[in-house]
Structures are given as structure tokens and as C-alpha cells.
Image (cartoon, rainbow, N blue to C red; front, side, top):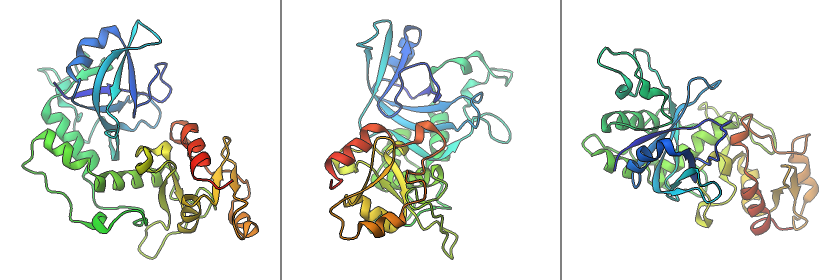
Length: 298
């Protein structure tokens, strides 16, 4: 087994869903197989406008032939392991590249940098994970009601842990909640997607919460496209099915509400969810329909 890097771009021609699967041609099969059963880092290439750099980690469960295209392969991601970095890591820092294994003996960029699938050294993997997940300095959101007080625990110490133990510790519920919040709030500009309000408290933090569309306890992943930024009141109504979303993200109000007119007045003038600019970060249809079927009180 080996740590790896998978290059992914949102406009990819491949059938990628980073939290679920990664499609690649046969030329990368042997490298991908080395990562089977181990952790990989996702990298958005620098040529992409506003590239996020190294933006997530995940564990490869298995490599299979793509059942729809026998000339392609799929790296199946182990459920529940995908995690967006709270602080995406640029490909380059102030002095050099972060993935030092891409440098040749002369300190120049080697051809390996062009490989969409490649193995990565333990040292480089650990460095990227540390930079992406350990920042504790400016947690934007308030603690939402669904998370225990454990969210306020002291930062996890992993100075002497191995890389694999480090990943296990860093991907626990506390860290996953923190990174989910940071990414959702960043994606939505710290603004409630239903009311349109962006309120900042006296401490400089956004008065908005990160809500799962399909809750974790019902199989919902900790990914931006399963999240939405909501004010406390809107979050409460969304979780209880008093408001929901149509397929086109129009905000719908339950007829079971005791005051639907008051709720309607809270909704932004457009009447639709104020979604992120990046298409890949907008609510995915399957999560929206799940919430409407199993949570929304029609």
C-alpha cells in the first residue's frame, strides 16, 4: 500500500465523484493499485482558474473495471472517509512546491508532476495533511445544535504519531464537523442561503450555521454539496421539515407550518436558495430529493 495523489478538476471529462469514485484510464492502473486500501490526496491543477490546490483526502477501498466502460477503471472511495480540507493547500508555498517528491536532483520540476495518478512519499503526504486540516485559528461558524460540546476540546496532538495514525485521528467526528463548517460557510460567503442575510457578531464570526441536507446519521456525507449555510432559525425549520427545496432549488414551505406567511416573509426575494458560484459545490439533486422525501412535511 502507498499514499497517493489523484488529480481532479471540476470540468473533468472523466466520471469523477471525488467522495465516491475516481475514473482513470489503464495507463494509471498500476499506480492506482498501489494506493488500494490506503489514503490519497486530491489535487486541483494550477491551470484551473482559482485552483484550490490540494483540497481533500480519501481512502481508496478498491480498484475495479468500470462496469460501463471496460477501457476505464474506477477507484472506489471507502464510504465516510472523504474529507475536504478546512484550508486547501496551494501547490506552491512561498519558497517551493509542497510535494517535494516532484523535484529532480537539480531541484527542478520532474515529469511526474504531469501524472494524474501518482504515489507520494509519507513525508509529503503528512505535510499536506498537516497544512490542510490542522488550522485552528479562525473557525468561522458557531457550534450548531447537533454537535456536542466536544467540538470545543483542545486541539488534537499528533506530533509523534505515524502518518496513518495521524489520518485516523484527524478524520474523527470533531475534525470532520469543523472542516465541514469551514468549507460550507466559505462556499456560501457566510450568508444564509434562505434569508440572504449575512450577519457578523461582535466577535467577528458569522451568525450562520452549516446544515447537512441529508444528515450524517442517515448516510449523508460531509461534503459541500450536501451542505447549506443557514441562520439558526432557518436551520431549525429545515431540519424539522418546515421548509424544503424543489429540484430547481426553489424554497418551499410546508403546509403543516402554523404560520406559513411568516416563514414566506423570511425567504429572500428571489424565492430560491442562494447557491454557491461553483457548480460542484451546489446542493446535489439526490440530497435535495432525499430531504424532500424523508424530512420535508408536504
